[in-house]
Length: 112
Image (cartoon, rainbow, N blue to C red; front, side, top):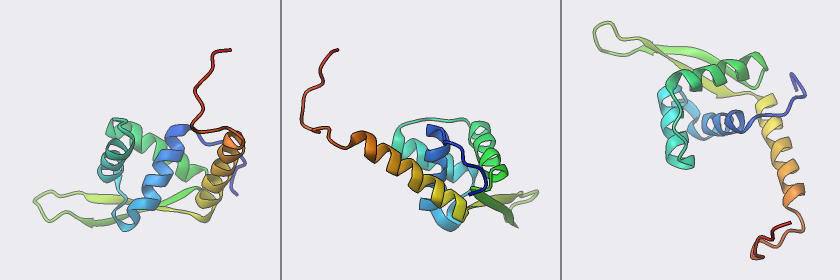
């Protein structure tokens, strides 16, 4: 893995959205997917800052697609999950699974 670092919640969610969206993983779609699935509304700049950080860490790659077919249309920056990104997500999931292990999901929360 490029860097053995723990992923923040936003990084995990962005990575999962990139993986889920496949070839449709560009900024606006990622932001919309995160809002639909998590209820979390992020600005487009927050999404891109997170994606660039993930790319620098080797967890995603990106390239530019074809420009939109409107006058002055911009090319979309498309993201793909990298093998190190899959590894990081699996590690994070394993850590949470270990934390949840032994907890009864139907038990009432107790105050300490």
